[in-house]
Image (cartoon, rainbow, N blue to C red; front, side, top):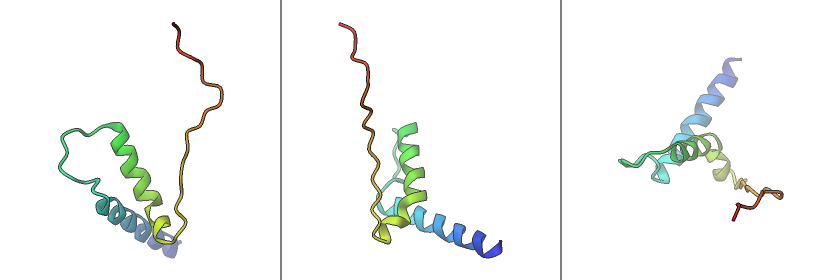
Length: 69
C-alpha cells in the first residue's frame, strides 16, 4: 500500500511539472473551468507523454442535432 502511494505522489508531481512546462500556471486573469480542466488532465496524464504514449482525446459526436433556423 505504501509503495502505491509513493508512486501516485511521484506521478502527480511529474504531472505538475508537465503542466508548468506548458505554461498552464502563468499569471493569467482569464481563468476558466476549461483551463482548470486542461491543467487537471495534464497533471494526471502528463507523465504519459514523457513515456512516449502521447494520449489524444477526440470529441467526435456522430448524431449532434442541427441548430434551428
